Length: 249
Image (tube, rainbow, N blue to C red):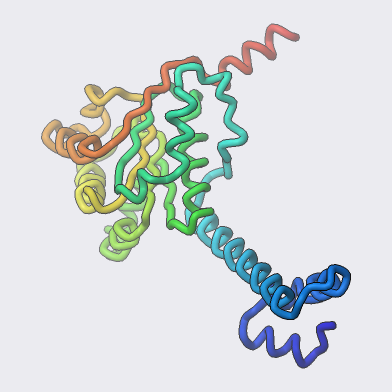
C-alpha cells in the first residue's frame, strides 16, 4: 500500500496520477495477478491520463468559450442544410494542421457557434491551443490593448495560438481603427494559423462591417485563400423551438 514515504516521493516527482490511483491499481494487481512490469505500466497509464486531462482543462480554460459545446450535442436532424459527413470530417482537425480557415455563413441560431465551439473543444482535447472571441469583443480588446501599450504582446499571443475562433462577425460595425487591427491579425495568421469565422453576412456585405472597401477586400482575400466555406441556410433553432412551445401551449 501507499505509505507516507512513497507518497512524498511521488509528490516530489509530481506524479499525482500515480499517487491518486496507486492503492486502486495495487489492489487490482493483487486480485488479477499482474506482474511487477504490468503493475508499473498500469500506474504509468494513470499518470498519462491525468496529465492529458490536466492539459485539456488548462487549454479549455484559456480558450474562454462562453459555454462548452460538443459534437454529440449537435442535432443534425435540425440542420438538413449541412452534409453530416462533411462536418464530421472537420473533427479530425486536419484543417488546423494544414492552417486552413473555416467560414460558417448563415442566419443566427442555425448552429454556427455550436459547431465552432465543438471544434475548439476537440482541438483542446488534442492538445492544441485555442482562443474564442466575438468580433465585437475582439475589437474592444484590441483597442484596450493599444491604449494600455500592451498591443504587441496581445498580437503575439494571437499569432501563436493554433486555432482562433471569431464569432458573430457582422452583428456590429467596427471602427476604422479596429478594422486596421483586425486586418493585421488576418495578415499575420495568413497561412500560419487557422481561423474559424462565424458570420450572418455574405462576403458582398462585409463592407458594412469594416467600412473600408480595400481593407475589406484584403481581409476576405486572406481569409478565403485557403478555406472551407459552409453555408447554414436554415431557420433558427431558437425560433423553431419557440414556435413549437407556442403551438403546444
